[in-house]
Length: 500
Ligand code: LM2
Ligand code: CA
Image: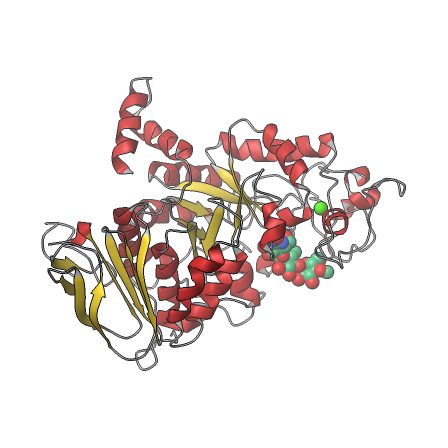
């Protein structure tokens, strides 16, 4: 994609923009497609994120980041206070408005789009059961919403009136009008409420944000989200959180992209324990039933599954790293990786300063997962370490591999006892060994031309000369087959671009 950006820049410079401004504008307007790679940067404050975009996210090929919710939130030592807005001021424990603004500019200049988490279904709760939700708004600013702006504050005759918590999570009226447990539910069908939400999102768009993760989208009617979208100053990207079944997610395809929950289950099944990667064999058949077209984001874990359970995590060491490599290898979906911090208490906020602000993120020097040498499917992080997934060189290698195979179709799938692999039609080959033993591959059909190939996962071609190989080397025979040894808990990723 780099060449396209340069051309766009050249065009924009013609309109009087500096090269930096042109790069920023090209980044903001670059669409998120199947060839884009995103990463959720959970628990990162704005200052740390700004330097990470410049030094690692941009250089490693990440196209977009998902940040913490940027608005003022309820105070507390738990990460989930960010999901309880008390005003729409861009002031949070992750940083001030000024720091946020600088971060967005730095990321755009590094070619990394900024998607923020937009908590617009509700405001902060507390012991607020039955209340209209106004009492928990910021003491620092004039209250944003008044009682009739909440579903619990509507006349009881209003069809949208509801003052209790959701108990049936799939019923449309209940899941959209009642409270996400304890959280005052905004009457998002009201134009006056929609305008306030749009103003909040427009404020961010004006600062260079490219789009939003719509938090709790399942709890707002798609029609309300579309109305809000129409009030925006630009065509912003929406990815909607519709937890659970794909059939409900399908209702939201008119207002943006969604996450593929069934795919995440596959990642969990394939990489939570040693020796199950071969389950990937069933993935293509499963995808056919998703009904999400090309609007699905694929993922391994997010802040919810990371803290509450239900996914592969950093605890799984090398298997965790392989799970990310897997979503980067499949042609299906728009992959989003996850970079967070380690914890013993699942409610714990990222490490904070004495002034109750999130501390700067510190990355271990390691450029890959900190795995336990004796048990590579476990890890050796200390509490509060940042995992810094965006710095892992095996994944930077996989991003380069993904770019190099483009949209080539998947062919020649093999699956046996913890091993899974496939070709990307004449363009590349990938193989996963999730077992604790070396796998001796014999005559695997790669469809690649005969020659020597350098593996992207273990190091890739030398970046300086483009000639030597820093990783493992594999040979493809005249008949297009590969025979060689793949180490335990590892991935082989070669493509036309890694021939040397
Ligand atoms: C989401 N997606 O749709 C977020 O991904 C998820 O992280 C949010 O829940 C949720 N929706 C609401 O925005 C998190 C966290 C909850 C937490 C809420 C609100 O997973 O545990 O709920 O944020 O902070 C907490 C308490 C809960 C209490 C509630 C209200 O855990 O027990 O309910 O606050 O006081 C009475
Ligand atoms: Ca709602």
